[in-house]
Amino acid sequence: MRLVAEGVTFAHPGSRLLLDHLMLQVEAGESVAVVGPSGSGKTTLLALLGGLLAPQAGTLALERGGTREPLADHVSWVLQTVNVLGDRTVLDNVAVGAYADGVSRATALARAERALADVGLAGTGDRPVRTLSGGEAQRVVIARAAVSERPVLLADEPTGQLDHRTSTDVIDALLASAADKVTVVVTHDPAIAARCSRTLALGSGVLTPSGS
Image (tube, rainbow, N blue to C red; front, side, top):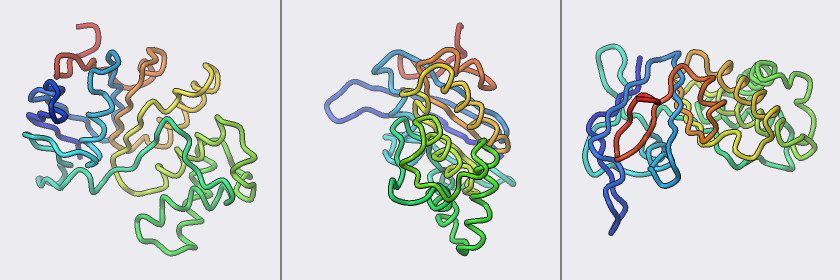
């Protein structure tokens, strides 16, 4: 199973070409960091992968078993801004990710408990999520994404609002919880990129191995 982007081209209306026949393949179990200067199109690339924008040309697909399926149908997200339901419990916040798969409440809660343990938050399920620290809340967001059986995880600056030590804990939790998934992480932090399987730099509309 792999994510496939072929010939992806995109420009915002009235603006310069941002992505120019971009190519990308990411295998299951692999994590790819996308780096590049502000305005290079990193967040736009994620929006295209996640189906929030449509390319002017090119193909975006999940390839498995010899067939290709629409990529956007198989994506979960971790965003820079911690987006949680502040008045609900930690467990309820994580279970939302499983409900997206159409499972029962019992199954969703069981998955959520396992996901919380995977990100180091076992035993916190009954706490209101508003009582958590910033790093803990971001791990809740990661658990919510991981608890879904969708095989592609997209993360947009997942540690952008955290200090260095907390960032390390959060990215470790993200990569561990998504170990079997296709993972794409946009980051400006070289230390975070270094923890991924490989790093690609976005510039002049295309992706190249970082440092090349």
